[in-house]
Length: 384
Ligand code: GLA
Image 1 (cartoon, rainbow, N blue to C red):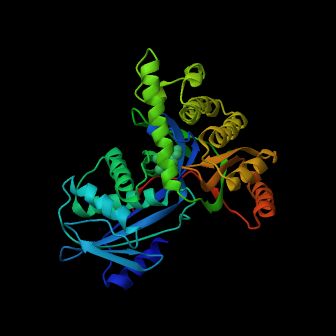
Image 2: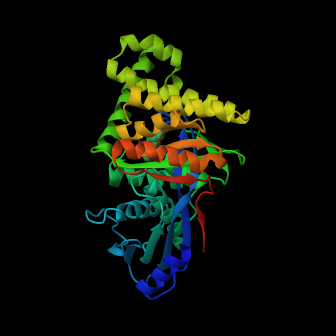
């Protein structure tokens, strides 16, 4: 893909690129909607990603091309304002605006990106675009931006230009991923650790290709409920509560009957999830993949029951997975309301498990789902 985008760049702009970067998508393995509740997540960077190539231009114009569409957007470097057509450009425009606050000089460029992350699959193609453009543009402008600050710049682009009040999970996973490892993040301290997974675990990514209406509004709605619940617990508990991370499952059980029922129901999910991640980590350390897989199933049940961010297509896959002995665990991955299920398997079982899941999905929904084997991979880096 790098050779392909290098050639497209040369043909389109008539010059060779001088800077190139790559950033992967991510898969969320355990810990759903815990990042903005300051809890814990286990995730991984994946073997699908996006390249971003740049050459400086002689004037103040930025020309930006999506290599798959060969669609171009141009704007003045000193006023990187959002566009309404070709909205993919907004992620890069948002990142550029963020970098300018860190001293990026207003010099124009020719840029092109090309990737292979399926769009709308819940694999964070937008975070990959933000992180590869962030790395390439900071190299072009010769500025140093710390990785967590780069993640925040990407997050701000999502908040401002895509209207999704996301946490930092997608950007952190894309930056900190490591081959054959999971990324364990504490979203309060922002401490990031990588845990080696070994050769015995693999993941199937089952893309339902379903994207239900109002996804972004639903995401923001869940976040508001979590914040309302945290405010409730802050008053009700006799220890400091800064976010749902500070509330235990027992405290939730004791308080739930006195709370607004919907707020209590929503809060149960991130509270349970954060505890599941800590438990999951201990099971991984002990090499207990089967125990870890059970937590993935529990995570999905909590999504479907408490957070209501699943959908029939995701449920079909998880229910099918529960009946296939070689699938150790399965759950929705990412924001929800469509997108993909991640399933834990032993690598030797990948083909058979994928076939069995797909057969059930086809029977119930009349078309296949898209299944790929996901390998935890290295995070974002410069290529040239
Ligand atoms: C999306 C958001 C992340 C995170 C997940 C759910 O991927 O972008 O910040 O909240 O959903 O865990």
